[in-house]
Length: 320
Ligand SMILES: Nc1nc2c(c(=O)[nH]1)N[C@H]1C(S)=C(S)[C@@H](COP(=O)(O)O)O[C@H]1N2
Ligand SMILES: [Mo]
Image (cartoon, rainbow, N blue to C red; front, side):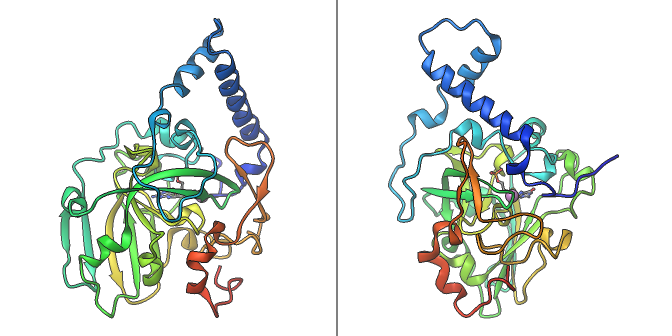
């Protein structure tokens, strides 16, 4: 059996996927134009039903976020059907297709390591003291596609501070749930399971960093990392680990899943950087899902004003 190496071919370069998306975009536009017309084709009718009346139609941010982009939001159907979540398979449609029996509730998170308070905590108790906020962020995958997503979440710093990290806590390490019975992708060794990621303490505490619980004001669907995921908008999407069960305060830089899988291609920092190519493709441009022409990728995904100072004095070619 042929097992593709993860992230082997940037999806932006693959013709079938391009035409798949363009076809869907075409269908969406056709459906919108033909709203009052009788369309006999079953495919078109299904597509029209799928895109109309989604949560995006009624959605308005409860209060605007300080770092929100005013770019056009990616439709909910795209955010929830074009995913990377290798625990459910390596193709973009796999997470939506194969995550139906995953149970995001009840859910516990273990908080461990260099902090005053540690232990196993129910998700409700983890979230209870906080009011979730809407944050509209650009989301850029290392494969060369991007979206604009209205997340619902809590600034990670607010959650972490409750546990009283000590001065020994220099990094935060996150772990995804390990449930091969519910996550069919974990039965294959495409990656070393469970998926792990990490942030330096100042990155974790940056006000942009979110623990997300929803999209378009609605609880996360399984394919997007229910019930709790990280969102780090100035880094490539793979840093934004899904379905988190462990938050560990540690003293030394941890290894991450993608680093372990291909150390020459994925580093710890993974800041969006158009000047540092992936060894097998350029990172200078990206395709916004739903658009035809590629656009320039922005340094730090456009969040330089908020994050660049954390990396001053660092060689970002070495620390990729
Ligand atoms: N546990 C886990 N988290 C993960 C991944 C994964 O395979 N497993 N994929 C990452 C990658 S490569 C990307 S681009 C984003 C995709 O998030 P989205 O599907 O919600 O857009 O999730 C990241 N988080
Ligand atoms: Mo990604």
